[in-house]
Image (cartoon, rainbow, N blue to C red):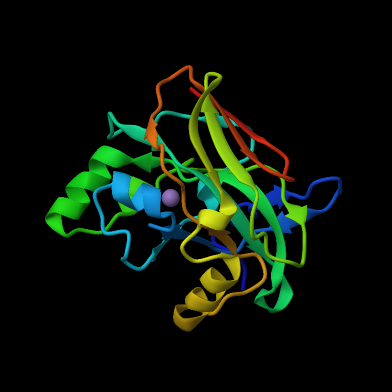
Length: 214
Ligand code: MN
């Protein structure tokens, strides 16, 4: 048998200080995982975090985020990303952005509809290089600056479910495998971006993420 047309290109993420690439299988995301962010969105901070997914080819590796059609209120969400290796064990971590069409998300919530158009659109997952580590990151500063002004600032220790707990909870619902990425949720301070903005995301110990809104 032969392919009817060329297979889509493999999606990979650079590994810091290495010439190897991380091959991506799936992208899981955690919502409502920092209490202060849960409150700013008008939800109950005693609630349980939630899961959704993005397509692997939504990753942005070149730092250019095209402002998407269909929305006039696109928000930044800075997040720790966990990369899984063979056996579903932790392979490493990276800085990522869960870009969100907030207006479409609000409409979906109001209508009891799914979030795909709000969360899983093209270019919705900018990411920096992965730093290998077999141990879960449990603390450290996580920040996002827009045009040099701090918008989000917290500590990874503020997560409601820590990395190990996220992996355990996801494993109850899905078979995790090598190549999976998990965006672990965003702290408070989310807000809109505009064309021309420069975003800078930092997590202590990881390569920074620089993104231009184009
Ligand atoms: Mn998020």
